[in-house]
Image 1 (cartoon, rainbow, N blue to C red):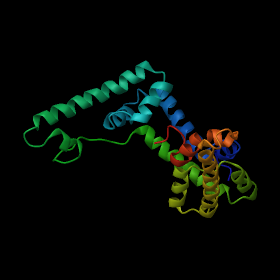
Image 2 (cartoon, rainbow, N blue to C red; image 1 turned 135 degrees about the vertical axis):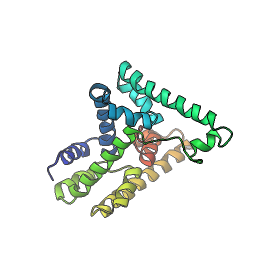
Image 3 (tube, rainbow, N blue to C red; image 1 turned 45 degrees about the horizontal axis):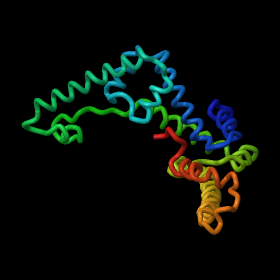
Image 4 (tube, one colour; image 1 turned 90 degrees about the vertical axis):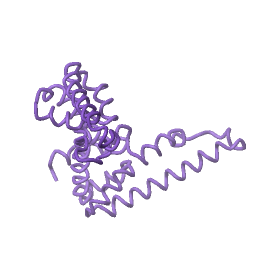
Length: 225
């Protein structure tokens, strides 16, 4: 395959870390920058952001770190706060018939509308795009070798790949098993060397990074939702 996603994936396989995590987080960063510099005045996008009541917690804080847009933040969250005031006013007026918590939980005639975080949607789209490219990529011997030499996929994207049921399922599953077995062996050594009897034994590089590595493998790179 020679589409852009495949080229990006080939490059990411040569990097340390989990390629789908890296590409997905980069895509979310591109979405945030595009929104901040090109689309913040798009009324349709603003309506979607208002319906979602802004970004989710993870992406709201990433927006603050990376967008560097005082005006964009003010425009988006003025809409959000105004919508929230409307929610609170409606809930207050309906207090005798249905409580605020019931409305927020969707119980009652007119629950508070909540759409999906736009950055979460960008993440999911990127994950699907790159997982689809990976499924096609590993059919080619040279790319299969590159995948085998890489860090493979985190558990989150391994399970997502398995749910897709692509032809690459066995390759992805085999890679995940090998990676998990290496992690367990390394953690066994970490635990052993924490014992006072073996505490003076030198730690390998893999043992020093094992706590961060196993967390990243279990739930994906930091910033994924």
